[in-house]
Amino acid sequence: MTAEWLAEVLGATVREFGYESLPQHEHPLMPPQLRRRLPSTEPGDVSPFVGRTAIIAGELHRVVGPDPEKPGMAIIAAGDRQFSTSMTTLRRQFAKP
Image (tube, rainbow, N blue to C red):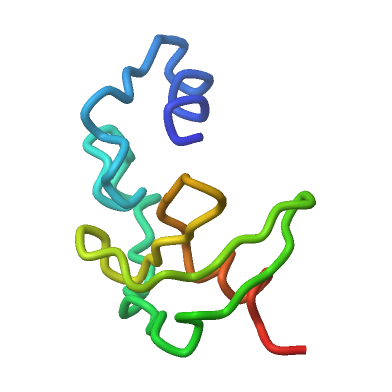
C-alpha cells in the first residue's frame, strides 16, 4: 500500500522488495512528516486455544500449539497438513461460544 501511494505521488515505480517486513513508519521512502509510529503490541498468548477444534470450510481444524518460529502465532492441524495462523484467526474461529 505504501508503494502504491508513493508511486502515485512521486510518479515513479517504488520497489517494495526487501521492505515487506518493515512497519510503515520505517519504510525508507516514507516522507518523515508522514511517518506515524504505531504502538507495538506484545505477541498474543496462544496457550488458551491449544487443543480447541473448529470446523472450517467443512474440515476439522485443531490448534496444536504455539509456532516456535513465529511468536504470537499458532500451529493448526487440518487432516495431514499443519500451518501457522494468527491470533486474529484463533479468536475468530476457535473462541469459546
